Picture 1 (spheres, rainbow, N blue to C red):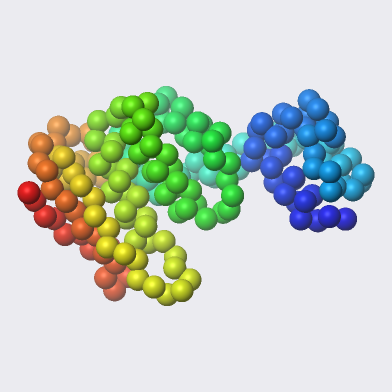
Picture 2 (tube, helix red, strand yellow):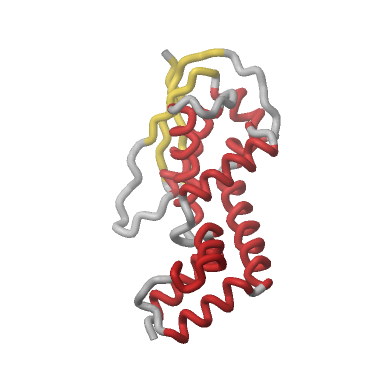
Length: 198
């Protein structure tokens, strides 16, 4: 048996709806050539099993919960429909590759910032807040080599103090314009931010 290829295809049936639909529609043609006949038969059976949809729903719920937990301030800026649309598009473009959800939250921040830069997404304060939460996650990212995370610099066009405080309570304020920077570092295991104004 080609266990890695089989396990990879099985996981893709759960996390990648396009792959699942392809296997359901094209049957064996959608599967890799290095699978044994028994592995192909099992994957084809799983692809049409009603339990697969339940497993997919559980996986999406867990993935969504982790993403929202890592990005509470970003989440507060969105209405429900826009957030659902953006997360759905992000997942479509980037199927999960690991269970390291901090990495996925970082990638979602990058996705949002790219959408803003492309002119495809306009949400008040989002550019500043997504950059801030990305920087905070970058500081918390595990570094197996034991190195210290680099200093993070986030540019704000609005006063970050009332903005961050309000978003932490789930409110969207009318923050005054103020060009400034937050410098973030990890000190003794704690995030430390320093404000510098123009």
